[in-house]
Image (tube, rainbow, N blue to C red; front, top):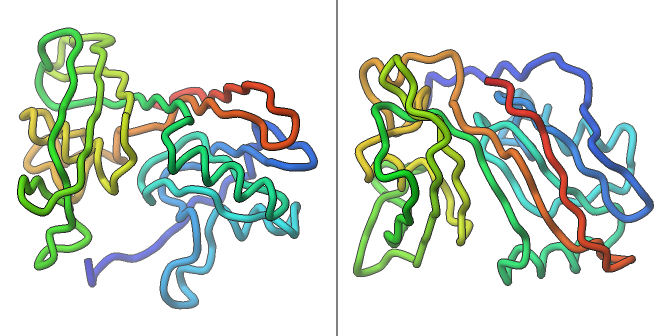
Length: 217
């Protein structure tokens, strides 16, 4: 990764919702959620939001190459409330992905424990001795003529790189994945993974809310 050059997209903010407690944005692929190490990686979604919402606070993250729905808090009480929802798996998340090959059957669950692969970090890998429990449900949306699969992924847990490793372990890596895919499956202009929906409970009103960002691929 030493030859990685960070070139964040020059795109306007896409705000899906904002009120006094939360702001929900559609993160583009190629933009960090939070600052990376070094001044050249200061441009990120939370810093762009800070120019409009000075008090914005982090709740969760998406990988650099993953696009889609992210929620941020606008005060500490909201941040604590939302953080608890993520920790106790009370949020509902769906992702859209394109995979190499045809995934079967039409529905299923991957249940494989994950942990960082220290010699090859930030890669994660399956480890039945020291891995943390990780489950992902899937629903096939289309088996494409070009030999790929369009799938909806529903993570039960929220481990780092969970969806990417779980699909790899099924023999169907996510297209455009520079860390886990190889050969033709890797040769795509972006990671074909998008956080499509996020359901949560509003930290002030208690209302159930669902946010959607249209899939760009």
